[in-house]
Image 1 (cartoon, helix red, strand yellow):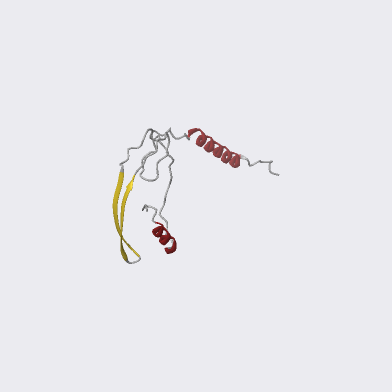
Image 2 (cartoon, rainbow, N blue to C red):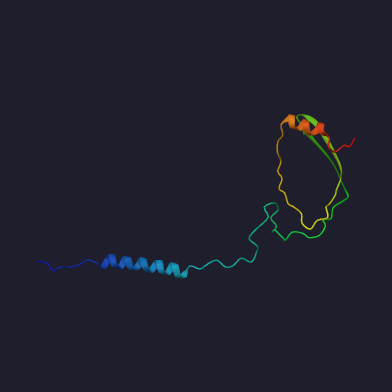
Length: 119
């Protein structure tokens, strides 16, 4: 008869090695340092978002511009000559806008309304 031999050496050594690896990983892993730059970045131009301006905006009294482009195969020219008014307020709302395509019927309604002309 052979003596009663227990073979626990290899599994116990493997378990101990794995435990040691996990403990070393947990103890030697450090948190990232606190960033020196602001995290929130404005998506538009890559600059950080600063505090909102206070006081009255510096704006010209009139805005004039001329745009020329092709629309439906037709040379189109848009002239802008608008008075600019800045309200006397402490805070200004901020809106995000994006280009949109309008159906021809809607565009014609905009053109025929002529809200920029008086009389």
